[in-house]
Length: 148
Image: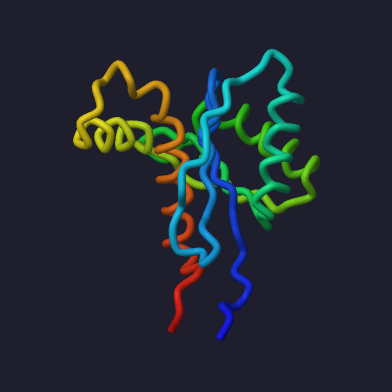
C-alpha cells in the first residue's frame, strides 16, 4: 500500500555568515542535512537559493530556527531572522514556522565532537547539524509522519 502524502519541510539555521539547511525525508520521520549556504552580500540571492531548494525537494513548509535568549526572551538577532523568514515566505508562497533554536548550535558542536570531528572542522557542517536538530524537533513535536 503506498504511503499517504506526508508534507516535507525545509529546516533552516540562519546565521549572519552561513545558513544551515536540512530537509525532512519522504515519510516525514527524520530530518536530513542538505548543505551549508554561505551568505552573500545581497540577501535576495540567499532567498532565491533557498526558494530553489524548496522547489527541488518539493517542500510544503519551511521551519526557521528562532533565536531566543535562554530566558525565553526574544533576542536582537530574532528580529533579523523573523524579517528574513517573512521575506522567504513571501517569495516562496510557503508557510513559515518559527521554531525555538535555543542551544542547537551548542548541541551540534557536542554531537560533532562526540563523533570524533576536530573542533577546527566543525565550521563546515555545524550549521547543517543545527538545522537538522531544529527540523527534527519540529517534526517530533508535530507528530508528522507518525502512524497511530
